[in-house]
Image 1 (cartoon, rainbow, N blue to C red):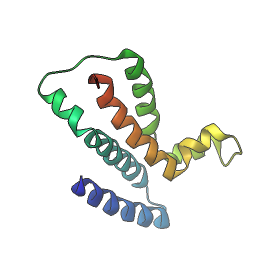
Image 2 (image 1 turned 90 degrees about the vertical axis):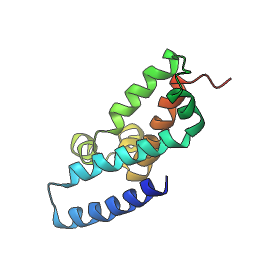
Image 3 (image 1 turned 45 degrees about the horizontal axis):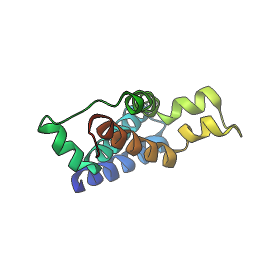
Length: 121
């Protein structure tokens, strides 16, 4: 997990530089940051991940479907949310456009993915 945090911090600095230079690499960097946050969420559920690796899993469709939808939404870079909706007062686009909530929801999606495959009883 420490390595993922190190990668996230390095990626954050690259995002800051790319945004100052108006570089086209920012989309790839934002997607990579979402991936690191998603993997961080998966590793937060290390107990469930261990069960999953051992082959002890049960599929929870009621949790898997929202997880897949949330994961797809989280891998859309924040720049696209601003392009599509702009700076509005509407809460729903702002949830996905703000970098802080975007990261939190990416971690949540990773955690929910492991929980949708492992019985927590």
